[in-house]
Length: 114
Image (cartoon, rainbow, N blue to C red):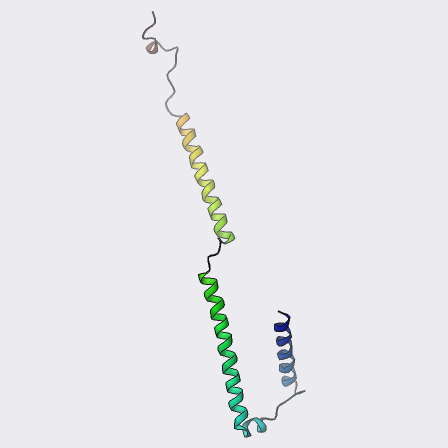
């Protein structure tokens, strides 16, 4: 990670130096030497391909690797479990609030008594 930060820092310094004209490459030297252009194009192509391959490998690994649930999905699953528990509680209360059990003091229940 330190290497990447160092590389980025060096590139930023070079860019700032180019913008402020502290460091400039004479354009005539670059245009006048076709070998420089070819080497620069090959280097840029190789770096771009390697970067694209690494990004592709990283993305395919992230997409295809079995990962756990996200925090949002975990919260939705907990909410679903809570809703199911509330439904069970309501059904249980409805079962108790239904028709009253027979009252033992009612005359219809005394079928065998005088």
